[in-house]
Image 1: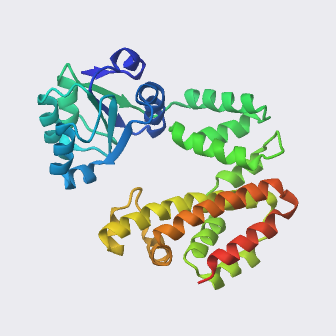
Image 2: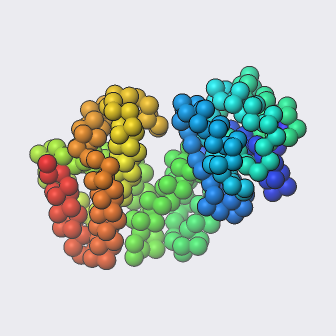
Image 3: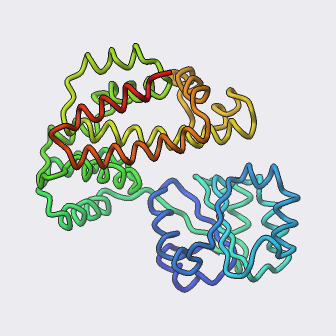
Length: 326
C-alpha cells in the first residue's frame, strides 16, 4: 500500500517496507526515528548485489532461523526490480519475526518492485521526494540557533541553494561549518563560498588524493603552492577522514574480488574517470590493516589540531609528509 512518512508510527509493525526516491537524508532520518529505537543494535545492512550473489545462503540462513533471532531488521540498499522475486518469495512464506526494509533510488511508476509494494495491503511503500527550500531553511535555522551562530539571510540562502533539495547534503555542509567554526560564533558569505565551493577546494582534494596515493613529490608541490590557514587544516583533516573511509571500502572490495578495475567500476557512488588512476595507486598502497590504522591516526591528528590551533599547520604537515612516504 502507498503510505506517507508521517504514518510510519502506526505502520511500523508491518514486516515489509519500501523506501524509494532521491531524498537520502529523509530516508536516513526515518530509519533513525522509526526503526532504530525498536531494533537497537539488531540492524543488518546489505546491498542488493550482495544478497543476490549469495541468495541461496541468505535464504537458508533467513528461513532456518539460525541467522537471526526475533526483532531483527534487514536493510537491503540500492534495491531494484532484480530483487522483486526474492521479496515475493519471502512475503509468501509469511515471515512474522523479521522486518525487511528495501531502500531504493528513484523507481518509476512501471517498476515491478514499486507496483508490488503499492498493490499489496500488507506491504508499505513510501516515496521520498526532494525537500523544498522552506524545509531546508527551517533545518538550517534550527542548527544555527542551537549552536548560537550568527549568519545572514544572504549566507543562509547560498547554503540552501547548494544543498540541491536534499537534507543529507545540507547536513554534510552543516557538519563542515561546525568543524570550521571552532572558537567562532559567526560565518559570513565569503567563508561559506570557500567552504562549499568545490572549485576553490580542488587543491585540498588533490592534496589528499596524492598523499594517499603516496605521490610525495606532487604532495609536497601542492603544499608549497598553497598558504593554508588553521581553518584550512580542519577542512583538510576532515577530507582525509572522508577519503580514507572511502579507501577502506575500496580495499575491502578489492580484498574480496582481487580486481582493481572491477573494484573501481562497481563502487558506489561512482568514481570519476579522471580519478581512477590515483585511486588505483591508493588501493595498491594500502592494505585493510593499514587503512584501519590510518583512520585511527587521522582521528588522533584532528583532536591534536583542535587542541593546539597555534601549531595546527605543523601538526598537519608532519602527518601529510609521513603518510605520503612509500
